[in-house]
Image (tube, rainbow, N blue to C red; front, side, top):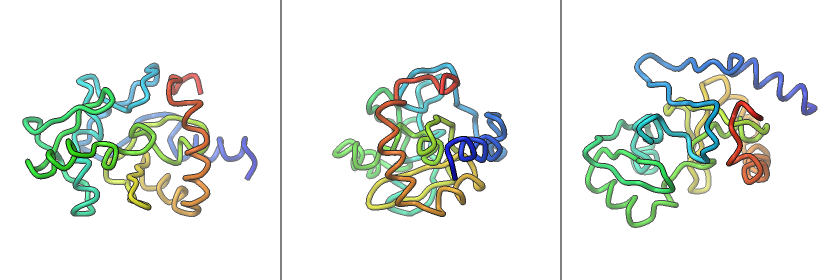
Length: 164
């Protein structure tokens, strides 16, 4: 797929940038932000989900705001003291890739919000996607999309999503 077709496919899958998420999930995305982390107005990442739980129980788990730690300008919430302590011991191990932006979006040169239920842990790295349709596109070539996203991320990490 050439670049313009890939961008068109992503735009359609993402609903022209509209943040449509599952009911009950807060919309945190700020298209004007130049931050390298995807956080809400309170600087909370992952829509409040526990990053360690993706690795330990292999499912998205809401965190508790009273159990919080900050890493690279983002606040993470945890479901247990044990998860908080694990994160504090090695935050880079548990922090989501690409600042918590959609992995497939980064692979095609964009920064999009995520649905915290659309994730995959690959080679010890947490990847999230915008929605189930985008997760399916990303899953068609995980290795290739990770390589593309790893290459694209340094150039777009500090660029506002609306400028991409």
